[in-house]
Each structure stands twice: as structure tokens, then as C-alpha cells.
Amino acid sequence: MRTSPADFTVGVEEEYQLVDGESGELKSRARCVIDWDWTGDIKPEMQENTLEVETRVCTGAECVRDELARLRLQAAVAAEARGLRVVAAGTHPFSGSEGQAFTPGEVYDRLRAEYRRLADTQHIFGMHVHVSVPERVDRVQVMNVARLYLPHLLALTASSPLYLEGDTGYASYRSILWRRWPRTGAPPRFEDATEFDALVRALMETGCIDAPGRLYWDMRPHHAYPTLEYRVADVTPRLEDAVAAAALARAITAGVVEGVLREPELPEALLGPLLRENAWRASRDGLGAELVVAEGGRLEVVPAREAILRLAESLAPTAGRLGDGAVLATIPSVLKRGDAAARIRAHVERSGGDLREVVRWLADETILGVGLDRRTRQREAMV
Image 1: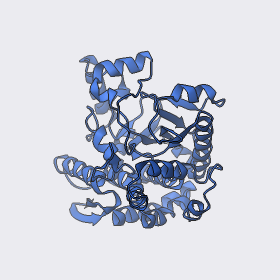
Image 2: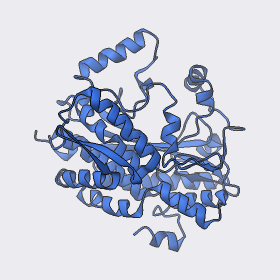
Image 3: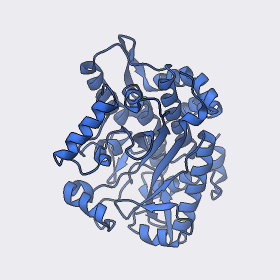
């Protein structure tokens, strides 16, 4: 079908760790930082050691880059005024839940009452990408196809190999921790929006959820905005990685609407379990994973890097029409540089296992290219 770039606006949410400027420990001081910030763009999250930012509605990936640079700068300046720093990574390398504070408020109190220890120990940090879908298109039918590429986005953004002072063996341990919660993982297949709405209605009428937002799937039609919300990604230290992931999510959405990406000719009884398998593989191995890719009615095992590259190449004309061609063309350089999990592990080795130094390095990575960085060597490594 004929579409225009304006049909596929995009917005990004990022969650940042709030850490002590000296020790690198997680600090529950979000209210202090938010009170100091004059912009009103920095928001609280369930835990007081988390800051959340949201871009405005953007017309393309270049706008997303400008917005995220601005928001990272604002969050970093507000934090440093309180002796703190912000870190964009899926988990903290060594701080646990002990001594951390829960954000006060009725909504968060209800979450804590319902989810109990899961809520108390929720110290993970993600990135969500919203992509609008034309009003005349059924978002749920778009989701049926787009969900198959959630493991690609997770592999691309994996940034959480460390947790509670140890290497977990996973590239995205954040995603493993998140799957403890109900109604997580990839969404099931629905015939259309009517069938999806029937599920939401049944869950609410039976008291399973009190609001549509309690569907925590890795992708969902947003209940308030005319978007598909991609919720699978770790927040990434490098700004450029976040922008590339947002451009890819936008291109996937447009590619499904335009018919470039289609559902494989396989039953859901096969696709659903294989999608969950790919998600676990991407969590464990990031860009080193091997994914099971469906081409028509045939299955093929493909390295994640190759699968992502194939996807980006197939969507290059779509991205070009959206005005995101140059950004999507950075995917090969992201693949060459490697996922953040691999770079974090490399820095652990370089630092002799000093996890406080790793946190400082992550804080420096988070503000590369936003106007605060003074680390020439790290700036040069961006290219």
C-alpha cells in the first residue's frame, strides 16, 4: 500500500541507572535529581535509582538522535549537580536491591502489592521504541509479523552481561530477569485487533489486570497512542546504537505495512516456540547468537549478525523512503563494533576486574556525542 514517512512517526523511551560519581554504586536519589532539573523532561520510574526520559514524537531517526542527545545531556547535567552520574546499560554490574528505595505513589504502591518481591528487586533498564501505524492499518496484524524480529533487536542492543558482581554468561541478563514477570515475552499471534481487544477485555473483567498497560509483552499495540511499542531492547551505552535500533524498528514496521516483510507460511504452533527460542538465544549470546530464521515455509539457522544484516538490506529501500537510509546504513558498523555486552566484558578484562572502573567507563560511554564528553580516545572510537 502507498504510505508516506509521516505515517510512521517514532519516539523512544530510555531508562538510566543513577550511580554515585565516586563509588559507582546505584543510588536511590531520583527525586533529588528531578527536583533540580528545570526542563521537566526527566521522569521517575518504579525504583528511585532510575531516571526515565522520552523523546518527543519524531519524524525520523535523525530527530531521534538529536532528542536522545539532548535528553542524555539534560539527565547527566542534573545528576552531576547532585554528585551523581547516569549510566545507560541493562543491569548494574554490582549493586543489588539492598538499601534501594521504592518510588512513592499510588500506582507504584499497587504494583508493589501485586508483584511483591519481583517489584522490590526490579533493577533493570530498558529502551522502548514507539512507531506509529497508519490509522487505516490493523496494528495487531502488523504485530504478527514484526514480532518475529524482536530477537534481532535484542541481539543488537544487548548490554547487560554483569549482575551482582559476576558475569552471568548472558549478553542480556536484563531480559532474563524481566521474563520472571507475568505476561512478558513475545506476544502471541492474533487474527486481528478484535481478537486482541477480546483478550484485553477478558483479562480486565476477570481481574487478571487492572489496565491494558499490564500487558508487558516485548511488543504491544499501545493502549493510548496509535503505535506499536517495541519493548525488547536493553538501553544501550552508545547513543549511535540506540538510534540504529530505533531506525531498524521503524523500518520493520513500515516494511510490514508495505508488504516487504510477510508472515512465513508456518503454523503458530511452530512459529511461537521458535520465536521464544530465538529470544532466549539472543539473551544468552547477543550478536554471537544463532537464530532460527523462517523463509517462506523453510527454516534456516543463521548467525545473528547475518540475520540482522539481511534484514537491514531488505529494508534499505523502505528506510530510504522514510528518510532513514543513512542511519540504517550504520548497522554494519554496529555489527562490526559488537554489542555492548562484548565491549563491557572487554573493559572488565582491561580494568583487571575493577567493576567500579567499568561503571565509570559506562557513564562516559553514555554521554559520548552529547556535548559533555571530554574523553578524546573514546570519541575517536565512535567512528
